[in-house]
Image 1 (cartoon, rainbow, N blue to C red):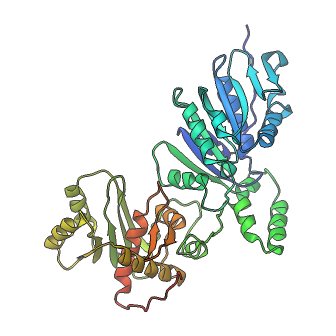
Image 2: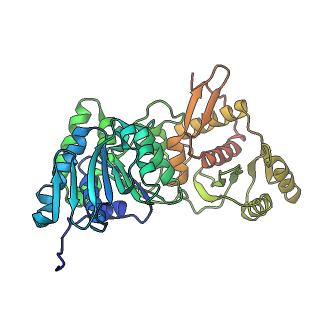
Length: 415
């Protein structure tokens, strides 16, 4: 039997890098009409063509009508038009495409997640992740256990409270074997996917309705501030310096004026943030999984200005040892509910007044994800479950060390 060459649709570079990432998981926040869906159709077809007879490949969407759209597109002229009809079979009833001597692609609904358990799946796409139930991810992930298959989770940004947003933030923070990618409407315009005039019209239309936040979510992948962030997403953005795709938290090459150090516990990170005379981040250090002695020595080696150091719990003897080495530079700070609340309120004021600045990276991501919740006796500040807040804590300690020279009367910002 002679080989048949099949030419798959060409992806533009940012689209390709996101979808064909080497990591097992790729979390992709994408603008509407940016090509994330078409790109993943190319990917799942490519994977199925490399599979064996009977191997299952899944496309999972929030409801049946959305999976039907993907099914119709994949079996339509853009994808299978150059494949001889005798090499694949389309089953309209079960919404599947079986490729001869290769894999079988199923188009599933996530509306009833319990119906997704049971199969062995070799690769999968979860479409419109921000609109799917979190239990759907649980079910799809379980189907990949035996095969070790890859998964692509794609969707629009829809606030900060959903599992898809939190999964993206976890991947963005560097979770092992998880990639994060963002494809905005600007990227799609640059790639020629749709014209600038269409994007300009969309912005003007939403802005005229007083719903610019909807445009920013759908087209720019910027979450709206749903009230759960103590710093305000707008204020966080206004303190961010540099290209929105830049990887570095550090934006200044001036020497440090102060350091803040947050010490790791369990699976957390030890993080050090240094600020220059203008309140800009000039040094950023972060590591995980080491001995306390190694951490202590590393902090001594890196710190070249006065530092406020987390002295809670196991941090207390570390601070004592640091002070023995340099009593003038190291001071401890014990975290408690009242002290953390004051620390976060002070940081919120500094961010709101634009007294600090930083680049894109771990710190900015953690600030965006940070949450607060009113309790009867106090306000609880933390990262969402599964994410980290170590960089925020180190940053807040550095800011406090700067501001203690000119203390403020903290206003009750949060009710």
